[in-house]
Length: 287
Image (cartoon, rainbow, N blue to C red; front, top):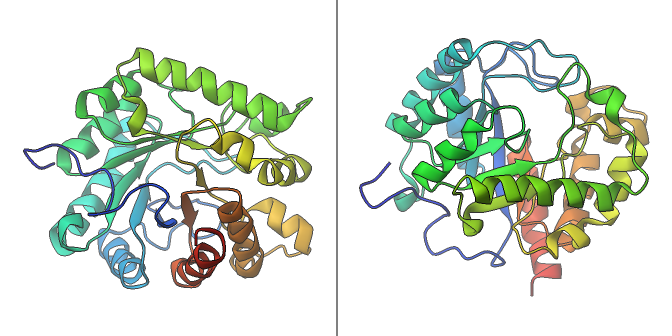
């Protein structure tokens, strides 16, 4: 953290200028498509360097798998996964002011968020939007950092059983508005809030497709929109492709749709191809 406060966006960037690409960096043994590949700090640093070279504006570091059925670890174990990799990346890559990536921490736990922000992270990405640990919102407020509020229900063990909606777009919108009210009440500034519709979290394939068609209604609330479709089950279902790492082109198609509907940030594993997808879609939709 610099004395002047946290770095919120790349230098000179304004929301709406172009689509930001956030590279996924899972520091876990059990994430759904790349668990165990980047667990060691050296491996995480090599991947961070690659994603940076490929054009990632942000890196999203996560020490707790949130895939359906994942086992949960405690905050100390999560910090032990995240902080060493974060430290290596901060020491090795240029800071955002010099063209390096912003560093986001994918966590729903206040102690992890607090420790990571103190170490130099820039964003918090909470899959529970403050629902799992309300103290996280106070941590965000104290540091005035950007915070992604993602729609979800339940946890990794229960969310598949909670995928019941009358109108999925309207209900996700209402639940994100309630999460935003909680964040504002905790002191988070509105201009630091991003929304994520939570593709794949307590949603069927039909729900995910409906949300993608209705993204413009969510973006109309005025908050920058992050969309994370990368390699997810619903893409595999549509394409009859059981291998997560073989879902790149389906992911790219979803990213193009998301940009057309107003998405501001794409969270993906395959940064190089999606940077190209985003630049082309930006030329078509943001000109």
